[in-house]
Length: 303
Image (cartoon, rainbow, N blue to C red; front, side, top):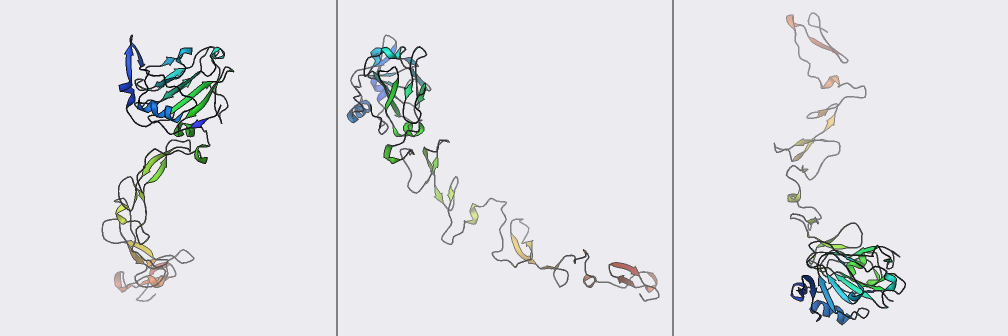
């Protein structure tokens, strides 16, 4: 029993035209609509396509073999429960589930001797769910041993379930893309890509690229971002240019001597006395004198 991965169903809007009500139960005509005909044309493991149902959660019965269940009218995730006493099902019993109208589908085994769902990578599980997106599908077939095998599914669902082999990889795309955009991961599985983001040197929600000079456009920086002068002198202390608080000038040198210099202390933690402008001061003509780092008033005009 081979496992096949096929493209998702095309958007044909088949479910609302295809479904009709019989005795208050949502069911469908036996003649396949375009989307179902598409699956049939692929000959997915002898898919008979005799019926489709778009309804609330449902428990399948032996007579449902060959049915295609749509989630169109589910109003959320549609849950299909497989028949009880799976070991009594006839050989070749199979169903297919299809996403529609934004609703996913979960297929689960019955709590009464329902067996397991088998597919590569997971070995055996009690439930599987389609990937998000219209027309994602899963086909399951009874394997005559009381279990159900996944025999066909769409690429995004295959990637989500960890089934590799389609095209040699396990990553699926969004189904459409915008030329030049950078794709982004969808979810945390590492196997599904979303449309992504535009790439440019300006614009909102954009992956930034440098201009022809290899720089980012200054307009992409936030309003409070600070820009530099374009060149600098090693060891200088930067200074604001203007009053915007966003532009720096080249600045001033830093040292313990020199004109127009930002002062720093010497190795002893003191400012050099040569940098002090000592003026005569005090009463009676007494001079202001310095002794190392100590200032004092002189006596009789002398220090």
